Length: 385
Ligand SMILES: O=C(O)CCC(=O)C(=O)O
Ligand SMILES: [Fe+2]
Image 1 (cartoon, helix red, strand yellow):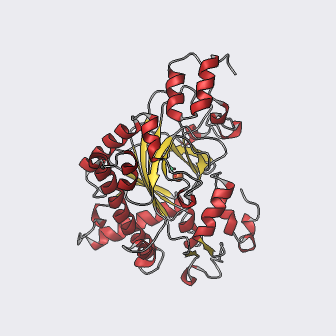
Image 2 (tube, helix red, strand yellow):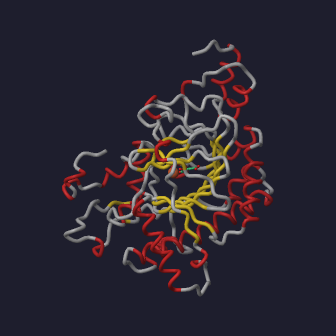
Image 3 (spheres, protein in one colour):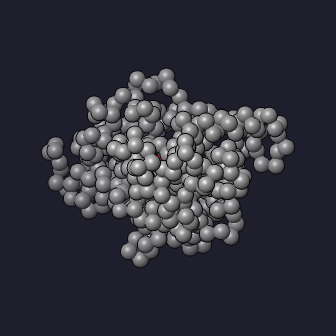
């Protein structure tokens, strides 16, 4: 460790909040991060074992124009079939893709960006009024405002977030008892749009799998309880991007994830053992397959490991909607997807049990789905990677 000013060290220990840390680090000559933000060597982005993204710089995630799939659009059937097949191929080969012309108004997304930035710029003491007491609300363990993620991974990510499973207003009223519609309205509207779009995409992938169109989307109908979560993320600029990560390598446990990133970049997906940048595309949304969809599709669609790097000079913001079924929902490939050529890869499990398992092993690479893997079905996969 570098020689650290005693009073600043004491302050850091006291607050442990990412934003306070960022300010302290920016205004001092300290070059080391507090221990808890220093990631295990092998996970850092410049470690020799993982710094191979350059080799794949020419590879780019599929960018799919989905205008023909828009809600209430009669659309050209041939175009719809082509785009559906592109989505299906992207889910199989990448587990990740970007969509453009998805129908969510640009003005709404711009407003969300402005409001989320304004929220994160508030003093920590104000934001922390929207912090859930994790001891009291077990089911909301990772909801509310949080300046650090003590429960989700062993190394602490360089980020803060604002998240919940219900109305945005429930959270904003913890800070502004009379409400703050300038903030809550666009944020609410945005994730409701993502919810509708996600249902539409789930109908496309269900048909591509040869299932009834509403196989997945009905799990998210109105009045159906489900575990979907929205989250607004802020990854502050960091003086030591070589030591830490904004979010460590993980796959998403849920069914389908919809993500909006700003122009800064930093999200990477793992492909053939190498990290590939998810290059920001103006107005696009990033879609990725989660573990539950991989299991449900009997491994045809891939839930792929991804991570987020910090930027030395620029703060990054993202908004994510993680579509997840209810805890008591059984996740398991339907008989149509299992035959001699495609033996059952995962034993059926309750989504709630899977979440519990994920919380117990923490976000760590792509190992979570080993929980349900039948090794005997795939001799070539007998050794987890
Ligand atoms: O912020 C990002 O780009 C990715 C966030 C992410 O991977 C997640 O929330 O699961
Ligand atoms: Fe993720």
